[in-house]
Image (cartoon, rainbow over all chains, first blue to last red):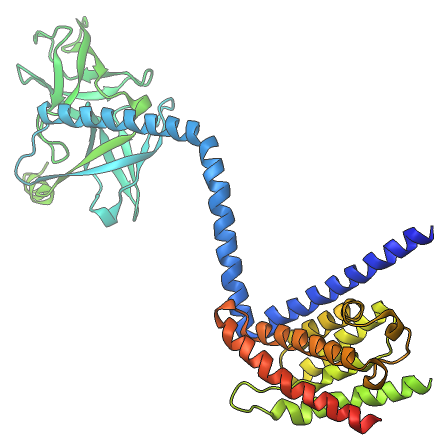
Length: 269
Length: 163
């Protein structure tokens, strides 16, 4: 028992000594400028060293995640590249007075009656109301409202949207309007019944408005039928753009738009 | 009781001497004697080790408070207070350790060894903490040696005065 007490007493001395020394050391590094700056430097170096060690270990655990991320990124970039390649071959060709602006879709609804899209480009980037918006596959819609950094696009699949269109090949004019049901389909109105429309015909923009350049893909005729007792054909169109997977769009900036609008106004349109 | 009053006197006297006079001694940038450590040197041989450590800490902290060197003297004097029994065991014989007070006339040359060890350890730890870097190791060593010589001379002067 005496031995144990002695042992404890010996250690008590050491503990008290260490506590007082640590207390004094804390005073040294907190109250003296030089010592504090040196201690701070050492502490920083030490924590950087430990971070490096823990990172070099945890990096290995993160490799699977990083791989997955890189593969996804690769796929996306490949797809984007392919899209751009097809864009060059596509019917969209920049003409005089037109400019294009790439934008990312930040909000997109598909299943409502009043669907709309929000893109990450706004008045700061030069987007204005009534500008045409299209994806690499074809027409998306028209800019309806613009804020500083965002714009609301009224897509084809909104019941209020009507886009001037024509049948490629015979240049027969009509207007595209959504049927309010499927985000994949729309209707082509105002095609006279005498016109020969068959499934597979391509529908493109007419270029008769200041919104879209001429000849931008809208969709392919799904089926066309003559409706009795009317003067018009009933034309179903498969839309070219997949609205459900829209992520990047292009805004067409028609630089002479105001000039054209003024001209149209002067004609009393 | 007789000792308590005497050591209280020594405590106050040495601290005052240190902060009023010796703290202002800066010869050639290397001589800074720290005579206050004599208080720990002079305490009775069989002082309780824990009390010794607390006394060392308090003494150092007091000197720190008046020298604006927070913690440096506290660390140094706590260290020598902790090491004092070990130094005794190394330099002194058992016969000498049975005495009450560590004095030159009872311990002779071993007392000199004891003082030199205490002062060197104390001064070295102080100057090292002051530099706070091993880059200045040789300057620290030089300051330790030169200042220790002065402190040791002062200690022996005090011994003469005490008698």
